Image 1 (cartoon, rainbow over the protein chains, first blue to last red):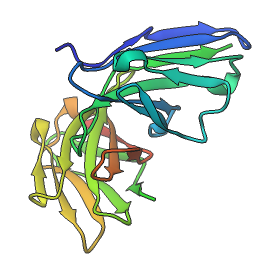
Image 2 (cartoon, one colour):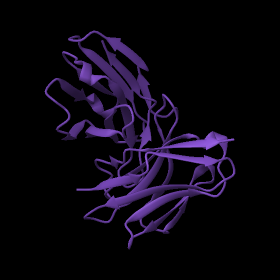
Image 3 (cartoon, rainbow over the protein chains, first blue to last red):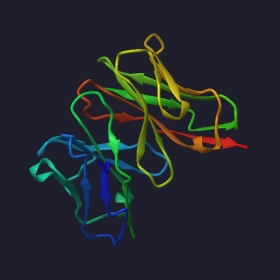
Image 4 (tube, chains in turn red, cyan):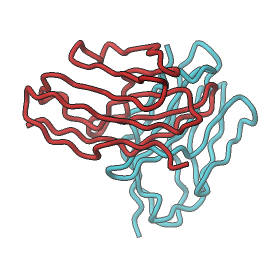
Length: 113
Length: 113
């Protein structure tokens, strides 16, 4: 088991462009989470999936953001028409059902210029 | 709604000294509490978790935390700091279903030689 993988590690994009991030969770975990972390802050919840179903979305997830988890395996997070305020670390985590804690990936750092 | 508050955004200790990082929680349901550590440009690593069993929880790297319901606290301690402990530490809370884990703003630990 290689843990949670995120790709790319870093992304620099121009304002207005679309970006897509990928997360590969631990294969036995049925739950997958996306968080956003800005400098000096704790992670903020964006959304989570149980298998392929997206069960909850934060109000932080504007209509420019969309997440998918086809077939309940990997997940993608797309940001359309990026803004400078989208610059942050995007963290993916996975877990089994129950209070076991999350396993996080190394994150994707997005810089919008 | 659940939340955690971490008291002190920065803590500095000398190598070999006691580490104490404070966390207070608010929860309307029995809380499940976690401490994570984050090194620069990395994701979060689970240090330890409280899941309603023993109130004194031991984790990795010599850290431990005690759940005190009367004080709504879950402070993290380590008897003797090591240089490698320098990092950002996050307290987090969730419910039994592990949904929507909420993180504190973090405490940056500096260890002086």
